[in-house]
Image (cartoon, rainbow, N blue to C red):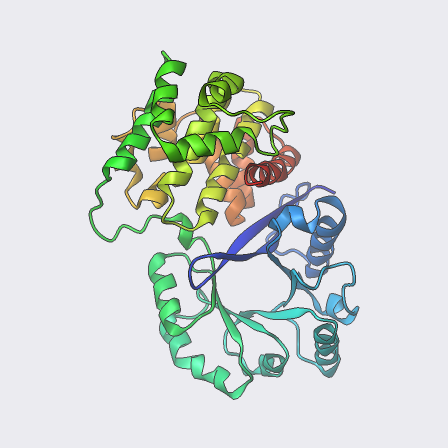
Length: 404
């Protein structure tokens, strides 16, 4: 059975990546019903995490939060899941019966960490507060004011780590941070934080100029070579990139000219855009850069599999640049006036219109669990849901190889 399986990042107080919640999105053959049986969801996630994809492939070695239903909790410790990296997440509809509490204690005794999902200060779940390690507070089900007023409720229990989930804005993150939350989950990190009118510094303008250079119709290796050689950080990144596990070269490449020659025009354009994106996001969470890279490769793979004769390099760029506004905290509209990109690329990024827009819309819908919208956009591209799933995990592996 092919499924939509995705992951959502979880950050600590310093906006460093802590782990991922593994999310089940449904069977691609049943049109993604809004209410999915929890037993099926958990069993499917476990099967794919253990046997098909591998937990390492899903989380890149970080913590994995996996939902457990009552049935799976009562089944005993999941001996196949590594206790060092797997956190058992107890769903909100699990009643704290004596059998459940005993099962949780058994899991704790086996060395597993436990999290309680979607907590809304309902006292019927209080017995679980004495056995779990992390409490996930739903920041959309309650106002931040209500959450603040109820935090004292935890003082009656042993020390707990608190995770604010469904955080969608930087303001919500800041408020929960001030309340003392330890972890944060949501898509706040992928949105621009436009507090005041931002100006691009000279170094960033230069980097954007390099992007413009590699996307010129009269591409010149000589000009690109000079621009990269003049930047020590970019030169280092190029040599690290070409010598990464992804290329698996027999002998190391030691010069910029040799590296560019090996990559060719398309490969050089791809490297420059990846390197520049990481530089532009240097003051942001590394997950923002990684998600941009995953989106880029996923767009490229979908373009390869689609039936519309799409330009793979343009599809790659629309994914990579889709978070440029969040990287620089400047509106996409203003950014598009500073980078001379192709018309279709500009329309997709700035207006979500044009032939490249379905790639971006499909990926955003996939990440957020809006599966019906994702399917509609995949039809426009000419890609099946099964191909989307396989491409997503291929993009995850590719992003991991680039960081080796």
